[in-house]
Length: 368
Ligand SMILES: [Zn+2]
Image 1 (tube, rainbow, N blue to C red):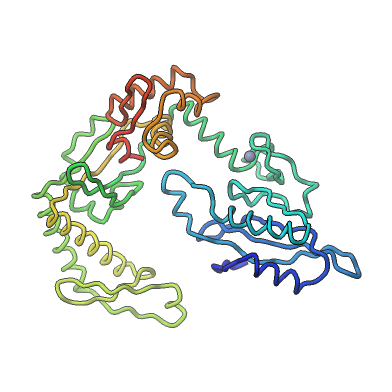
Image 2 (cartoon, helix red, strand yellow):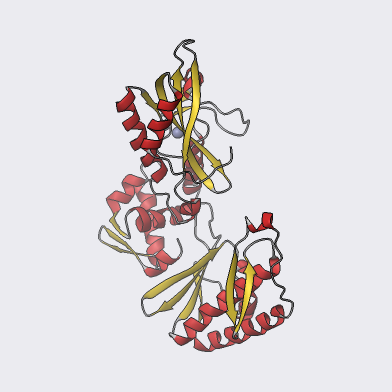
């Protein structure tokens, strides 16, 4: 089913249910996903008046935002689920029906439909109803989410290396602005112009920071302008038919006093120009407002370090105590292992530990 950003409300559901007729006996909420992320589908099951047959009708979908959330360190409670619960419980009360929502915490498309509940088992780890997977690569006794959790725990136990990812910031005094994260440094549009600078850096530490000061930024601006001047010689106006214009947005950018229209997709030259010009804008802002750049590289961070840092930074909002950390890793890490991890993170400047108080530092924040 093609997902549209449906505005789904309790009132709309009531209207639809009343229109269908028969006796509504179940409202169910089920996760589904497409290229834009997870969304919830709501259904009603009706007992038809004369035949008494059960019939399922689609009521609508709930989709409230892209899955960009997943990349921001933690997944907050899904607002889709909260809305589905609110609507589902109101319908339950109005029609005295069953509200069936097998996965209210995490998106999961392996949950049973209400009509196949009998074939379902409870996940051994989280107790959620699931249809056991038929994939030969996945365990059958747990849900996919718990499988991922078990795997992640194993990486934490084994202290697997986790040095992927480079993050770039603008900074001035204690103020940091995130410019972006790339899994490889080369993916940043300004990477080609910083090659010498990065190649000359010794990456001896666990956290290595390449800093661009004023003179580097002046040179970066010059390099970016040269590159844009070269690329812009080949500039052509967007050519789009009606069908394509549905999928592409065109932005107006100004460069050296001239306006250009740039397509955001299906035109690699436009996409490159747009990335270069916005990198130039950032660099000019940095020069004018006295910002520097800091680029963070990791060399020796493990999943254990990363997990503890994320826990302190995101779920504890930067500050916690050792007991809370021990509780979080109960059954996964010993208190000795937690202590060793905190020592390492303190030594590399990501945390401060004061008796039992643990606080994240700017460097710690900037790598998770
Ligand atoms: Zn589970």
